[in-house]
Image (cartoon, rainbow, N blue to C red; front, side, top):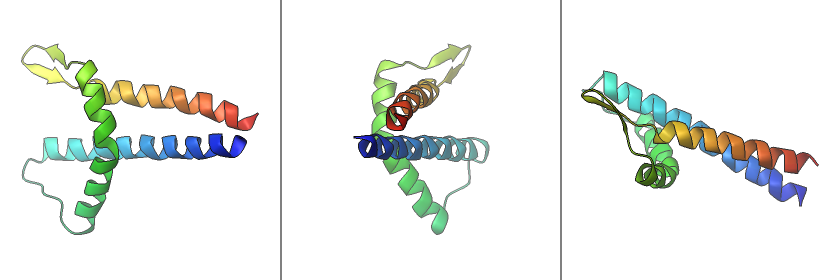
Length: 97
C-alpha cells in the first residue's frame, strides 16, 4: 500500500513542477509578446501545457479571475498549486507510515 502512495506522491510532485513550468512560460509570453518557442523549447512547452491543461481548465471553471481595476488576475493556478501541495502532504504522510 505504501508503494501506491509513493507513486501518487511522485505524480503529484511532477504535476506541481509542471505547474511551475507553466507559470514561467506564461510570464515569458506575457512580458515578451513576440517570443515563440522553437525546437526543444517548443517540445517542453507542449509537454507542460498538455500535463497541466486538464486541471487548470477545471479550476478556471470554479475560480473566477480576480478583478483589480482594468486588470484580471487568474487565481486558479495559485489555488491549484496550494491544493496540490496540501494533497502531496497528505499522501506523503500516508506513504511514510
